[in-house]
Length: 267
Length: 264
Image (tube, rainbow over all chains, first blue to last red; front, top):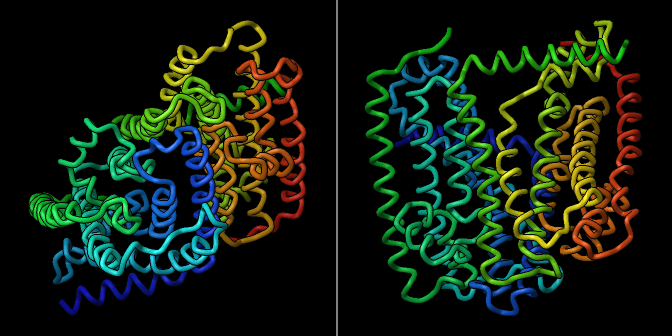
């Protein structure tokens, strides 16, 4: 366990190095958040109250999404890992007396948490200081905040185990970029990054709730904003735990297959 | 003569780049599909949003689709031709740009040509599909003038985004820091430009007119296209982008003049 903790710490420290990049990211995230808030404002006015979420919840959802972007963004997967697979450095990784799956799992989580911690504080600060209709709200209650934290970690776990599967699939193809684009593009939409899931029509939403994608960022953000409340929360948590375990086992199974037939590229 | 030679050279560049990409056919295909899918998801998102209402600030579903299509096409064409400027910081860092300066040939041509990437055309599929959908849903009367307007919006948009890419590349001459701040202006416009700009309110509309002239290729000609105004001269707004492009070119020229190699 200690060695995996070290990988986590290493990536965390590396992530903290890029401070200038975070100024850029802050600007981007604020602009994105504000533009989305403005667009939904126009939409809310157009629909006079028939939206599936109330406007305050939407605003909070948007700001959470922007602030914790680094946790759930399947797009910004660890490029070093892809490079390792394609340029042959994977050979060194295989020499280490550790499990590749656990090692990569810890470093991915480490990098994501480091980036999120650094990025979320300024974004949240600005989001709480926005003028009235665009201001982020506090969680509905202390209990919902605790549930938010719990589901946030479960959702992070599901996202990372999903990314691990994408990494592992790259062992079976020589050019991973294409696969990665198809998979991450789909997840971006299905996990509620483009529009919150309650906006999906009922029949699609039903199908989506049978997949792991509905249990990524969707659950914690909607619990925080009060859109998901009461007894509905607990089955969601159960399903989150189920998907976390299922994706973890699937990833390990794929890794076991990949390990048998690793071809080291280049040199 | 000079122009003819340059065009020939550019075609040569483009064909070499395309051939090299074609060595990995599966990857190329997945790249196209992936980019198509990303854009297509945005289209579905608009469709889903429109279940709750029929129009937003006077724009119907069809109007928004036309707007979305124009912006997607503009951005994709700009990425296709101007990709070299997008990855320009890498060229400076690797010393590739230094080598380009030694060649007796236009710099802009080399930068543009060396990174021509056919794999970027994926979103065009979505854009054309959206255009057809938009034409069927909107109430626009199609005549010579409106067809011209939508073509001018697309061409103007392409030039505008290319100008922004040139601007982004030019910043590499003045600062070794991360220049991705300008991404807000390019990707931001691509993502949020799918709605007519006045939806975002007066402040944003002003910014998009006086700071970066997005409204010249989106809001103003759109008013004419959708028949919200009779002032036909709004259809000529996209010509204004030429001024913006000139401004970007001057900055680029200034940057090239003052360029010092970072010596790698």
